[in-house]
Image 1 (cartoon, rainbow over the protein chains, first blue to last red):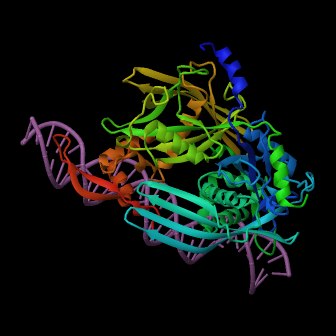
Image 2 (image 1 turned 90 degrees about the vertical axis):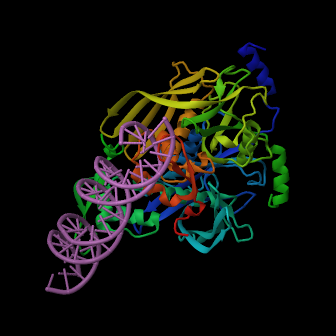
Image 3 (image 1 turned 90 degrees about the horizontal axis):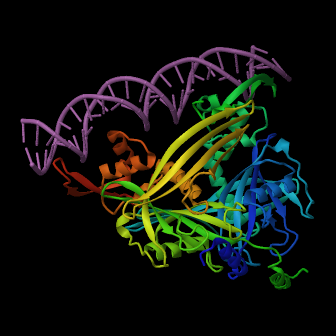
Length: 290
Length: 290
DNA sequence: CAAATAGTGTCTATTAGACAATATATA
DNA sequence: TATATATTGTCTAATAGACACTATTTG
């Protein structure tokens, strides 16, 4: 069989020989409510089994004639009404038993958007949707060491809260950092005997995306995707602090982002104190030297 | 339908309603030949259409009852004879037309190993296999700027060489960094009219993994996965320089990695000059403060 | 001893951390 | 004017960059 055409024709007949997995996207959409700065993410309430009534990440099955990126943009447009949202691929989860229905791979994405741009289309898909504030809490931390192995285990309680609807979704996770010789690995697993009210392995995906966000905020412009067109520096700093989970020094923070923003000249008066200037993102910053 | 058991039973009958993609792993296995330090990667010569006789990344279809990580370890054991190799997920490629046969998603992984540990099992799968040195060359660089958009395009020639077999595999790629407002993206595409002798979109995956390797080498211990059990600091520095593509200052390099290595007390005499000490990786370094 | 590479010391420039001082709004 | 937050200035410590110096081997 030396002719490519022939080969492909033959292949076509056999292509379903092996059982294939289904593929979905699961999207962690972060935004920041600007009134009282808080990191929030979008959850959808499930109307069907499995995990009926639990809260889950938005997303859905990839169509056979679209890429994962197209699937993500399609889903986001359906759920949030935003087109052309910032999204990056996180990880493809492939545990054999991650979905009780059948073999499903999940390509997870993180999407960031300013809150003012979006309108939740709740009930569009006969499902409830809402923004949940994110809180992580370290429950315990253990170390184990042998001659050629080192292990750090941390148990983390992830709590997602929507005050309007008065719901909380929770999950306990175990983050394990291992080092066998030079081989290091970092795994996140669900603590199965805990009361998990987040559907599937979505809590795992959410925690993973939080780590990614924290990490990238320090050396990329990623945080600006959470800001409105114009913003004040104290606001921007608050967003950084929220994501990093620690407070930063004013002077140093401003030095750091000085060349990433441009003053608009406008001011906002927000109380009995000096008004603060409005800035916008300096899109020329990206390539540094340009 | 309020009973979960019933629901799942029903689901089982319908689960093949939608057409599913096939899923493969494609693995970029890097190693360093220690004689004349050079970064090498493993390629397999294809015996069948499509891309017959072209060189391709090792990998294969994921079984329905294994995870992607298990598939990767299985493939690596088959191809290189190594078990328990360091591997990390890179990206899941999902272009609709990336494989002419049918819809195939590729979950790509990067694996690192010292060269002394492995034995190539060439011909195991009736295929030829070999280690290729990696070279990238910038062909041209362009900038474009409008009021709210900024774009940098670089054309890169990727050349993979195996001197023993006297073969070269080449591909031309276009790396595009875009910034629309706050939204930045970095995409790699194949230059289709160039003479590409690397199968499928594998050149893209290889370039992507090179970027990842370069990036992580600076702030993780990843490079030690390429080193043998014991190594000298000049050798280690050579590996860093090779990956980063630039020379480093001795004194500073040694300060940098001082707490990541442990002197063994042994020495190697390699010529008419002062012998250099052998070090091993300090596995306690990982968590910093421990 | 000359040549070659291993390994250390040190001066300078840059950046991070910490805190203080100044500026400008409202009640 | 008191209060509150915005914004800038500056001193000190730590780190990076650059280069020179010392050490130890073989021919």
